[in-house]
Length: 315
Image 1 (tube, rainbow, N blue to C red):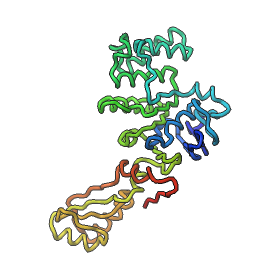
Image 2: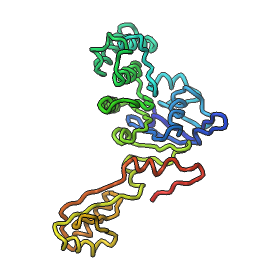
Image 3: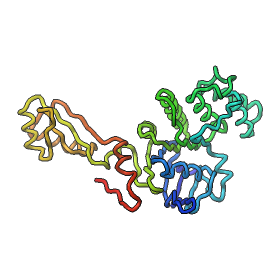
Image 4: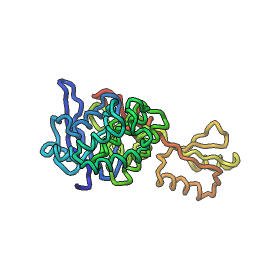
């Protein structure tokens, strides 16, 4: 494999007259979590289906797990795992039987299949429920079993398509920890999600998909800095300190708190250092400093949902 687990250029897909993917580019380094954010119908699931060989693209080039997607689909399938929006668990089988079935499909020997099943039941905290029908499992247990089934063949690249949809907060956090553990062991994750806090918690890089195009890409912090509204809040011990700061900081505005000022800032280290230097020169003492940046909710709302012919601008 190259250093890129996924490398995509100009990926396109239409269903009839509906253009779903309009020439997207993606680069996902090995051993990272890459998250696709987008509203319903933005093209997230279509992207996963194409890259996991479930449907064909209309155009573009892609290499997945080091293999050409169009020329080597069997090699791609052998290297990846997929957990979709809807559980692939067979409710009539027990948890153990579901995993043994996947071991057979992955052509493991009987001994290796038993060993791998036992390992995954323990890893996903399903030992006590192993002999019970999966139909009796809670939503969180079914999702853990679903992901465990994906891991039977030890894939190094996993597609997780909205894996925590419908789960309660505790089950979601359990899944997050499982994802972190997988990445710590060298697995690459392409995650699609509508939960912005999920992308913020897990993703090394995030791409925002809207109307079939990537409208922004970067780390969570980089995306947040693109949206206006970031500022540094300064609080002073007395009015004299605040007034001295106002004379130095021309763009500062007062807050409701009589001793606090708000200074526009992108929150970067460079901007903070420049601000502190401005206050250091006249020896102005600041009692409290806090950085406030837009969150991913702000990013999502600013970058998605615009008409197709309207260009998004950010400062």
